[in-house]
Length: 234
Ligand SMILES: N[C@@H](CCC(=O)N[C@@H](CS)C(=O)NCC(=O)O)C(=O)O
Image (cartoon, rainbow, N blue to C red; front, side, top):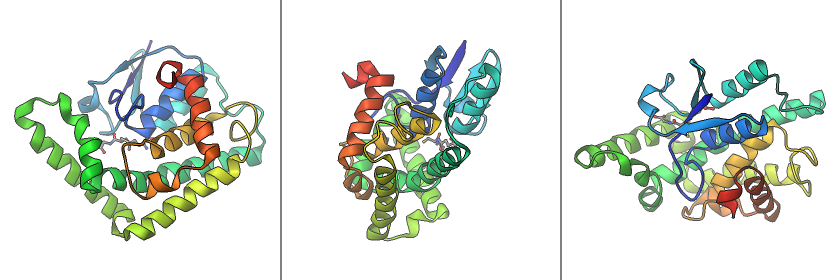
């Protein structure tokens, strides 16, 4: 049995981490049963979620979890895609995970109102005497990470411009198709869905949320939510 280590539902989504949400979709795409454990963060081998325990084998990082599924279970997430489509899929995933992600992170953690409405709530399960201190330290670390990565050094309008270009690129490449490459979801749809769903979370305001509202991205989020999380979508 596979155990997926998660944060637990937040922000009206199955998980407040786009990487965990992506992994849930990948596991469901591959038809694998799994249970969720939202108390494993301190055991995370890379200090981040997600990671999985697959019958004692520990795999950390959503991309390596995908590789594990492909190797161990022989599931090809990109069956039927051309070499060129596989390359586009990889490039789009990297755009979401290594570029758009930081605008999203900055929007949620650096702005007081968004932080209070969103990330601050993740710590509600921490015992009261240390909850406040952990919130402050975690926020400081994430804001510093955004600065070290570079996004945190840009002005709000520059971050908006970068996020808008990412979301416009996704909307343009998706066009009127149900999924990235047509009628069937592929591996990259797990990632794209997750980041679009996160960008559209209505409790946040700022450049990512403001530029995410393309009609085709909203419909795409709804389509994948209904497919993989019918109870949340209902
Ligand atoms: N490359 C990793 C990224 C995972 C990641 O950044 N997870 C974040 C949540 S969105 C995390 O656990 N952060 C905790 C921390 O940095 O302390 C993946 O694809 O799984």
